[in-house]
Structures are given as C-alpha cells and as structure tokens.
Length: 207
Image: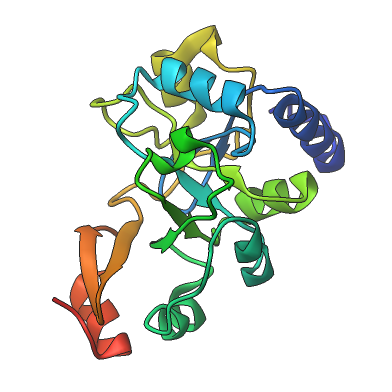
C-alpha cells in the first residue's frame, strides 16, 4: 500500500479487485489475511490455488456488523449471542449453519460457515467499503507460518495475489479462536487468541 496515496483511494482499488474476482491481502488483529468475494466461486477457486490449500478445508469470513450475518447463516444460535456481544469485534470465529445458497467451496460441502468481525481498523474499513462479507483465510501457503507483515505475504505468495494493504506488522501470536456448537454445547474447533475457558465462562456451556 503506497504511503502517499489516500486511504479512500486504496480502499476503492481493493474493492475493484474484489469485485472483479481478485485476491487482496490485508491485516487483521492477528495476522494478514486473504480476501476474495465469498459469493464468487471462481474467486474462491483462485484463493485455494494461491494458498495451495486442500479443497476440504472451509474458509473463514469477515463481516462488518451482525446484521450481515443474514447474508451467510440460517440462524444465530442462542449460545453464540453472549459471545458475539462480548468478543466481537475481535479474534473469535463462530461456525454457523450456512445458507444453502452459499458456494460449496466456502462451506467445504459441510453446510457450515465461519464468521467474525475484525477489530483491526483497516480490515473493518475494507469490509465496509466492499459492502458485504469477505474471506479472511490466512495470507500464507497452507502449512507454512502465517504472515505478520506485508513482506511475509510477498515472500510466500509473491505475484500470485493482486493487491496488498500494508499496515505494518500485525500482533501475531495465535490466530482467531474457532468455536462451533454441538447440540446445547459449545465446541472448540481451534484454540486461538481467546482461551476456550474464557469463552465457556462467558456462555456457561461447553464440552
């Protein structure tokens, strides 16, 4: 991202890339992520190719606000509501039952979709400028270290992506915690920046 360009110009360019099926790297509160339009199957295919990612692994998404959940999910489980109030925006991804209309690549054919609201200002501005959900899978080759800085993105992905929004170093550490639901209990899918104990304490239910 060029320092001498205004933020609005940069975001407009990023939105154009996304709307034409391109891939944008951007910072989150944990690591850099890769954004494509999650409703564009061709863009999702390219995302998997860029990351050399197995097609049996679903892709996380970002939304601007809770109201955008209706674009992705069938319903909001009651167990998730206190977690959304407490931890959104932040590094907590919740796995919902996805709408039947979602591309199979997004849900990995299992009917679910992971969603969160990022607390990173630039990530939030990108989602807002795009006007809908974007993907937020990590900006790295699958199996390699996640990217803490734009230079890490360049070293791993090089010219295979269309644009990088460089906001300096991210916090790194652990990625987002991923939580699902089984019957009346929360399920830990991936331990991350927020401990499962803290999440269970807030909700009162877990396994």
